[in-house]
Length: 400
Image 1: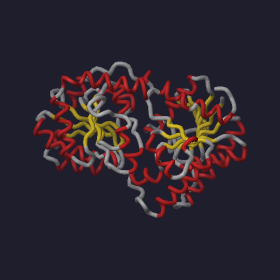
Image 2 (image 1 turned 180 degrees about the vertical axis):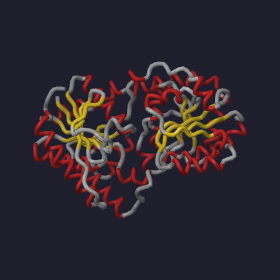
Image 3 (image 1 turned 180 degrees about the horizontal axis):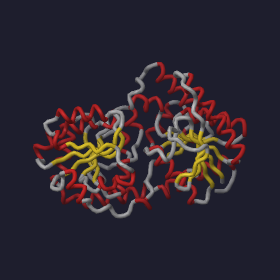
Image 4 (image 1 turned 90 degrees about the horizontal axis):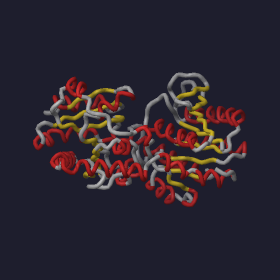
C-alpha cells in the first residue's frame, strides 16, 4: 500500500500540525505501508525540492509570486496540483490522503480525478473557524461563508473523510455530508516518545528563580483563542490563595507582545515569566518544572469543535492538566478523573480551580495515572492508526 499525503507544511517546522503528520506517517510505516508527503506553497522552511527528515520523504511545491487574496489562494491550488501530479506520475501511489486546509483538498481532487485515484480528505479544523480563531477572519463575513462552502464541497467530493474528533463529524453531518463516509481519527501521541517524566531540572529552576515556587504553566503557541490573557488575569486572585505561585509561559506566537504587555501591568508581573520559543529538545526541561498545565481556551466554534494535542501530550507525561470546559476539551478530559475542567472566559473560576488543585495534592498521583492510562488506551497512535486501514482497503480494493 502506497499512500501519498498532501499537506500544508511539515517538519522541520514545529507545530501541532507537523507533529500530528509525523505521528501518522511514522505509525503507517510501522504497519509496513509506504508513505510520502507533498507540501503546499505555505511550507515556509527553506530546503531542497525533495527532502528527507527523520526518515520521512517530503516533496516540496514552489511558492507563487506576490499576489493578493483570493488570486494567491487559487494560484497555490494550481501549483500544488501540478506538483502533486508530477509526484503521482513518479511515485505511483495507491491512495491520496489530503489534509486540511481545504486548498489541499481542492488541489488533490484535480489529480484524483485525472488519475483515477481514491481520495481521503482529513479535516483537522475548519479553515473558516481557524481564521476566526487566529484573528485573520471574521465570523459570518462573506469570506467566512465562501470558505465554509468550499469545505463542505470538498468533503462531499472526497471518497472518504477523516476528522480528528466527533465535534467535526457532527458538524459535517449537519451540513449534509454522508456520515457513513466519515471516520474519526482522533489526535493521539506516540507513546514510545513518553516514558517516565523527566526529573525536575533544578538548575533551570534556580536560573528562573522558582526553586521554591508552585508553578502553573502553558507550553504551546500564543493564539488569542488559547485564552492566555485570562490566565494572566487569574494570577493575582490565585496568589491570594497560593502566595508562592508562579506562571511559566513557554512558546510564542501572534499574541506574545500583547500578553507581555498585559503581564507587565499585572500586580504579579514579577511572578510571570515568558521564555520565548525554546528548541524542541529543550521543552522537557520546562515541563519538569510545571506542577499544573493550564489550557484556558476561549469558547468559540473552533474550540468547541476541535480537540487540541497539547493536553494529551501532557497526560502522556503524567502531568496534571486543567482546561476550560469547551467541547474540544470535554472529548479529552474527564473532570475530576483525568483532569480539571473550569468555566471558559472566567479568570476568577480559573483561579479557583487551580487553587483547589493545589489544595488537594494527595489526589495528584491518582490523576496522573488516570491521565496516562486514558492516553495509552484511547489516544495511542499505534492503535489510532488502525482506523485508516478499513477506509484505505475499501477505496483501493487492496488488502492492508
